[in-house]
Image (cartoon, rainbow, N blue to C red; front, side):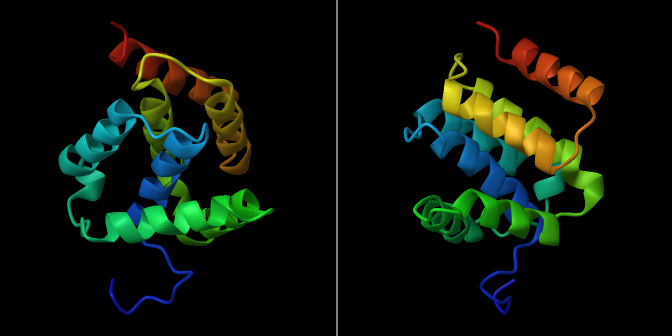
Length: 140
């Protein structure tokens, strides 16, 4: 997607941006979280057509937004504008997997997951099932 305007994200960029946002939410990008993001991109069908070279650019968008006062609102605006509704639960599931990747959920991650649930209008029961699945996949 090289000719996209700067505020235009592909569906996959949106998914990646949310995963990076969850990892960066506590100001500590853990190796286990970065490995989870990388493996999700490498293994999941939703990323089959994803240009891996966009990862760094998408991460920079997230970092730049996090430096702004209303950056999280801007990020969610980009997500709502560019992510099809059919991928909202996928986005939440990926975010939960990144949050659970290091075996501990930290307060900033929990707050961001709550915000993602709200912004993407994830049904409470569906959210609980997604969270349970992430917990089960990452138990040690």
